[in-house]
Image 1 (cartoon, rainbow, N blue to C red):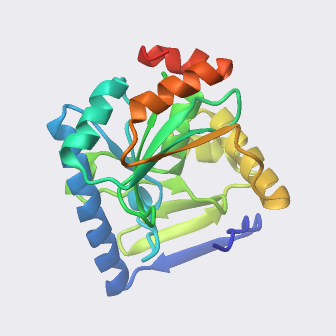
Image 2: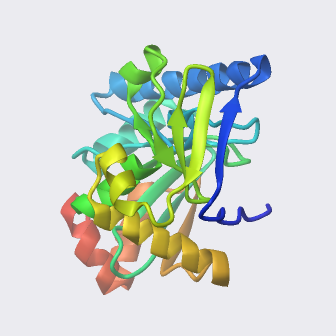
Length: 240
């Protein structure tokens, strides 16, 4: 997959969606609605984030669902096993200071994923989702699109006929107000994505693959025994 390059500071463009774009958006949002409804059967509130929330979708765009609220891992895993046909899962901890997360991939090609933090997210990490665009089931039903920032550091602002996209570089306070997040969140993402743009992706602290036939809970317990830093975060789930 070709890595998206950060846009120049002067970048500005208005995009008008054609009928195919609206059809793709409706199709992917209907698929996300089904996932969110199934989570709701278990008393779990999920959110769609990224391009699905903003509307600047592509045919190749993934369906990214996240569970941010305080939900036990046991309930989460039970819900996944009861209501979803899933392919595999991964435990990912980007750095020793970032909250580890579980990603459950519903398809082999990884285009539909439900993620959940393993531990309580600090405010700045929770705000990262709103930075990219975040909608809940009610928003999906009402066809609400929200502003957010993509990997090119472009602010996507929905319009009636499409969206306006513009660089956020040098506009961090303004963008923070538009997205209703602390300016530190915008500055952090600008720093991280600019560094990635120059250096490429850096290593991941922990990345553990879990095939469908293995137990998610057992894998987490194993990581707890093997890694003290992971155990500090995952102990919140009561599994360490």
